[in-house]
Length: 619
Image 1 (cartoon, rainbow, N blue to C red):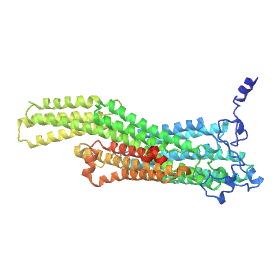
Image 2: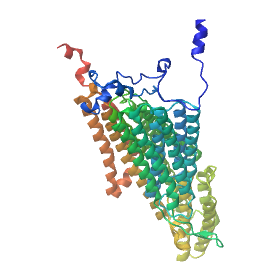
Image 3: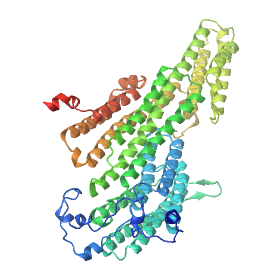
Image 4: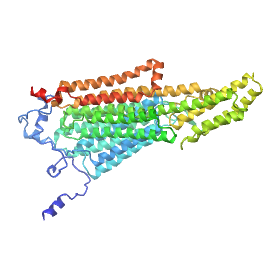
């Protein structure tokens, strides 16, 4: 009989259309953390006489009457993220992974676009999480709302491939789609807050803050929807099928509205502690997202390794060292963050500042992990480019020494050398048809010019044609080699056909473009790596419990900040271009970051030498 009762008590109840976030039957829910009761909410009522961020200390005497205590709702609290929250996180990481694989960072415009897209995606995720950790309750309405939020995330995936804010365009579609999905996201969120307010209506102290949150969310939704009307109208010539291009800065409005919305929501919870994040699993949500972002970095690096394998590159000591350093960087970042994690409550306002600062930490982590994969590719590209150049110089030297009787033998020797190393190893999915056509035409001109020179050694035109043909052929080989590694340079505006061709077939100009692209990668990787260490130290400082607030811990964090700033200062090497070029052509970029990160980990776990000597304590 007892067994039957036990089985019945664990039987799941059918879903209701709406569910209250209040913990009416919290004693029956073993998976929930301790609730906010009349006894432990007295400190909140008397917060005006205490420090805002102090939640520990001796219990205060009862000063509030029964009416005030009755206005303190008891919310359901979860010790960890729910399955619906975890499922929502999967949409976030899928969006981030897809966008990262589709949009290369090859100039300052693409870098700012990447940061902007991540900001909108992150703040949309954060807005939903601010509701979920406090008020979510499993019911039919909440599941329908979640389905709409999943659809919003799919909408981000639709906009991602065409995301080029601030760039001249002739289509309004991407702006209209993004404004619409942002509006839908906030409308659904406002509806969720409204349903929560309905269940809290008996607790009068919650009406004003909840109404303010609903109003701000609805206001953001209306602004997102009205942005479409403010966009310039498309002007197209139907006969020619051409639309006039225009430039709009509507993305700045999206960034501003999303930021203000987050500040307003967090600010309300700081002023009205009755709907604060105390007792929630907000810390677990942010740490879980950090873990997901680190995991996305592993995916990016594994994709880079697979591209290297498809290109037939040899895993020599230099390449193996770069991959090992990249993996260690991710592992060290993991240790630097989670070894300092403090899950206990550390203050209502502090906790919300701590969570909001994760935006800056996450964007630096994303840029570091994205850039690390690019730097691995850069090392591989340098190795392969040196090999290609060596093969060209070898064949060229043989031709000068008279090793080839005619131009056909000369061109075939060059073709055989480069085909085996480059053209025959191009992975599937890389369109090299145009480059291959230019390569073949260059070899034909090379053979003809060589034959002409053999007949007349004083023919300077033939010499120039040979030089130009070799330059064109090598330029195409280098460009194809970078394309096979999925490394591109920003396209320049076309003026005249001749000018574009000169740029395409100029070997020195082509190499300069790739160097400029990787100088940008070098700058933002080192800057982001240093700032990631700084933000981790700040986040750790905010979350430190009172028992760990001592000089030794402060010195550790200060040392981490100094090391982080030191990594940032490495970017100053770009003030001396020869030194920067020498450093970028070495194999020490990733190992430098790895070594400094390792020092940070060692310092964070270091203990004074006398702590390991028992005789000192006994003295």
